[in-house]
Image 1 (spheres, rainbow, N blue to C red):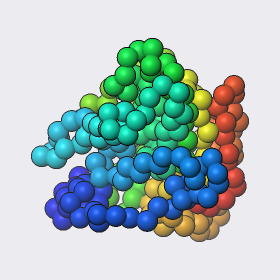
Image 2 (tube, one colour):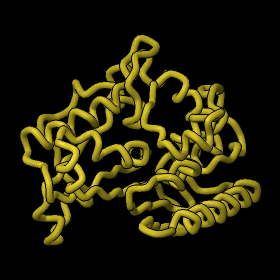
Image 3 (cartoon, helix red, strand yellow):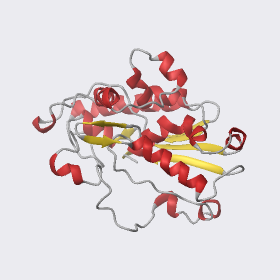
Image 4 (spheres, rainbow, N blue to C red):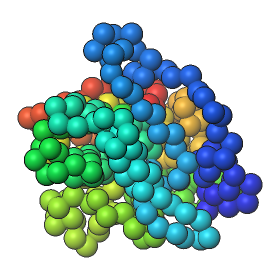
Length: 260
């Protein structure tokens, strides 16, 4: 649906309009010695499936998982990734949800002998994937009547995108609702690979959807009803963050209005 009409050629649905080069920012441009000397790979988003799917639907291709496999294959076969390497696999927003889904499978996707794979250290960086399974305060305006919450949207994606990296533990626990294994509030609890999760307690992407549209990157509550909802949302996010911070799972969650 997002890729229909003129959206079909947008940057979320095609790489045709990508520039030959782009300037790196954030962690990719960090001058810190350990990061500055590292090999860094940016995988822009063009598959509209949070990098999870491997299917054709609605006359479109949703091949995010195939892109991830191709990138990891290239890192090994042409870039020298091998035993002894440290691989930080992560993403932001939609990329974070893809990283969450694939993280426990990354080592297995490397085209290396089993023993060599075991000697690649994998860690995760998951920025803004702590989605809550709460009904929205109000549906979107008439332009998006089909949207009834992030859980519903995730279930719809799960129905057609052929996501196979569901996590054994998560798939067993949620056998009747496998879409939950694509959803942060459920899947992050069962990811075994050590990771750092980052998430704002007033996540503006989620509030934007919950309020029916108030600004993707800068949503602020308007009025007592939205303020009360936002504070409950923040408290639930903080509780989720505390539940995740166990063992080698680390969480940074601020009380900021932001996303990624």
